[in-house]
Length: 237
Image 1 (cartoon, rainbow, N blue to C red):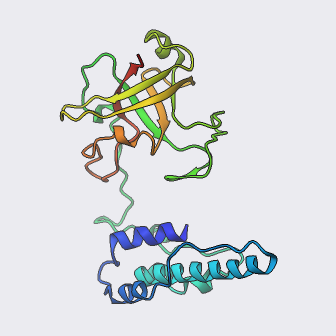
Image 2: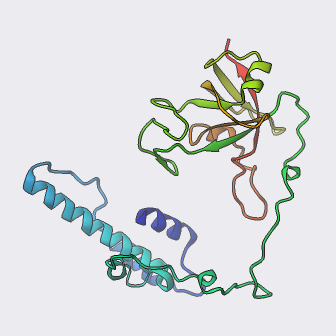
Image 3: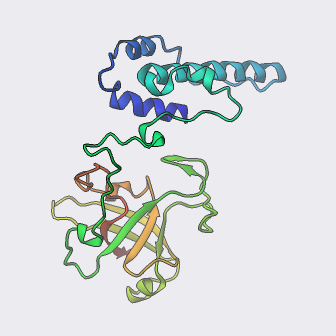
């Protein structure tokens, strides 16, 4: 988790009005980042754990250097048995907006999607499995949905499957429906019946990320529209 926060912080740069010098100095002092070799002997394991702790401490120092207003004294504060709260304005009921209030944007609904004329179109949502943190995959199992030893899966409404002449657990391909002339396709997906709304399908990311056009994102937040990709199912020959 600490490493993920560090990467996000480094990507966005120092906080507004903050000099980047402390962050640069901390990064330049980064210890050897080569993979840590684990000695599985009794004494060697403890030494390896100490090295791991040292690296974790240094990662927290880097995070604190990039965002001192939030993570100052990170290594000391994290020792508290119940952790610590991130001091962000909304937690204090302070809203840094022009009117000083929380401004809520209302989603107009599916109308935000561009109209697709193709009658075979389905809307793909990419999802995580149980044993996954963002794009880090810990196993090929997903006990949320009863899937084991496989991630090349397409969840589909039973009626949608039957209407398309797709056999139970048949392998299919997905193609993105777009007007930019780029062919985006993922093959080898096993169709599983799942209680999805008709017209909606789902599959795992990052395996299905190739289907998402780079220009397909929300213009306000910049968030990729990975929950509503227009696709068609192609039955494997």
